[in-house]
Length: 464
Image (cartoon, rainbow, N blue to C red):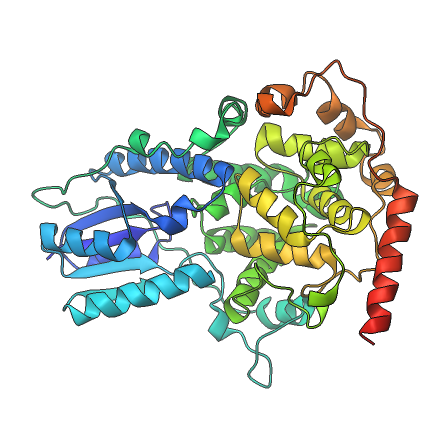
């Protein structure tokens, strides 16, 4: 009997527990991706990156004699229809632990089981499942450092080998055409600019991992904050869409760790930080909607996303060089250096006293490596209301950050240059010209800092 493998953020063959189990079942395997309301609600850049990932994974499946079935509709309705069409008796998938996905998946699992279909979810895109990492009292970790101490020495399941061949059905079910979904439509002009630089797919992810291990691992801890050097692994977009598993990366780094290679443990710590974000989202499902820390609902953030200062921030026109360079990097590449993300977020939430949810949603619309858990945790961390938060009175100064992490000015020069690609990527409706002079700061750094500290002091006084 056929097995439907419902794909989500796991577009790979290697280390795919649900796919491995399906192949072992003995029946035909039908890989399916469903464009449901959860996917359609994603931002423009994530949907564009997803479109490219699906196209590449379809080619990968073709290479092993299989194919990718695409269907549009609510997940349960689509799966019920496919079960009826194919005679499948099993539906397998990888767990997605965002709150929306959990509710959807529970309903799907219950309904399928009630109709006599075996429905199973498998470990997906984390090193450790949230219920497997607990404090001594049995609760969830709320601070990263003790979380890291708890997991750093744990065994991680070795990555599963990719199947050489996937058993195929005698007759394939109908599939939508990917181009008809038009997932990249909202990217407008940015589609060509970002797409020209984008690397996609499992083979590309594996190649990038090997290049990082050979060329960058040893200097990772020393250079990861250098803005111009991009000292990171550049694996985030692959992890976001499951084109490589964290377990694959974890085990690939182990030889370097055991040899004492500088940077190995620091990199694994960052990989675990990603897990920590998902653990927080699992235990605090509203982390992408509500302040994580109690009492912060009274903080006087401005919630108007159309204020001129916020529009200037979105358009890379704040007049603060490092902040504008960071935003422009995002529009040209679909990514942003992690240090730059913190600086841009701090300027919005503190200097401009803007609600972190406005920035979080903007990043969701613009980042090809958007990860719902990491994005929510990162914004709350910078704003001061989240787990492991930087104290609210710690206000990043973009100029001093530039002196430290972009001493040569190369990062700012690259992304503020008229020929950076920025003016070709952003909407024409913004009416931005490369010939226009740099704008004056919408809020100067001293004024913004003073305003932020005054708001914090008032808030702290009212809330003890």
